[in-house]
Length: 236
Image (tube, rainbow, N blue to C red; front, side, top):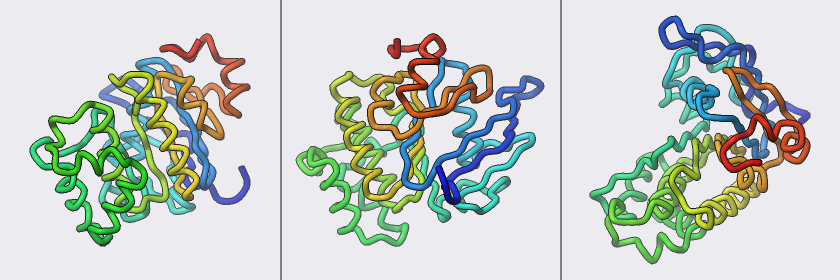
């Protein structure tokens, strides 16, 4: 884990009213690595995503993206710095076709042809469905489209929040195979997951969160061995 990490979170705290949800979170994501952030419901994982992605202000602590201090930076500026979030619950435009969803992303300065080429090379199924309304596709296909839209911005760091939510295990496996491919292209990835095993299969490192803190970090196998009692939801 040498060199400047793509993301470094130091002693991060955040609260909803008087209830402190993040209680001093430390997390480091090396450049080009896939890191799985695991933990039960209510551990603070989604709040951490909101704070990192600029949607929620922390009460204290530091966030560095590629060595740049980005504490009070809004989502648009973070996107320009290379941070892209795929939120839980698939962000696609249901009344537009697959192709229209994708070409909308070309405003970010990447040509429409390049956006489509990237999407269809990672997800050939989207090419087959390109004239279909996004809202009529399966959950897995919508997740593929959401990931393709994110990749159109040529991110340095991709935050995947609960990629497997509501999807069949076979589809989840397929999506995580693509996560591994995306990482091979040089994109760093943080996978926030309740279902550990599939995410760990493609991860270089894992971190476990519970009670608003990171309680373990390391290589996937050692984290599974030591923390299997904490990692709930299909991990045991």
